[in-house]
Image (cartoon, rainbow, N blue to C red):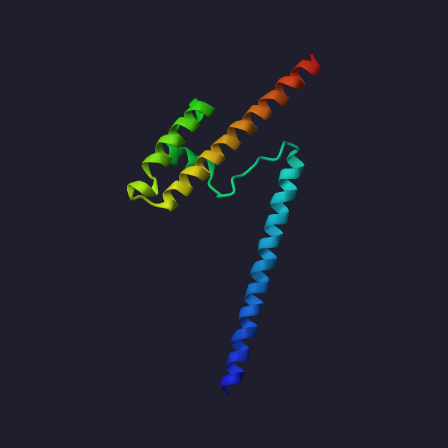
Length: 125
């Protein structure tokens, strides 16, 4: 009786996991196809998976005033303040690092888009 129950739980779990995996794959494929259809340059993402909005909050910056100098300045200050030597956590330093990484990639992306738009305008004129 116990082995039958155990097998039932295993098969049910595998079935649920299989359906969830299939659905996630479909959603990822659909999102990938939609971004490819947009035709724009692929936007780089941070390894830490922090969104741009969250990164702006972590470093206390505003998107319309974003510069590489501001990112570096905030990063250096917050990274130093949250160092392990001062009794703070590596986790906070990691969040600060990934926030800086995300914003640098966002700034590079925006600059590339701007260059492509300016290049397209001069060629069509």
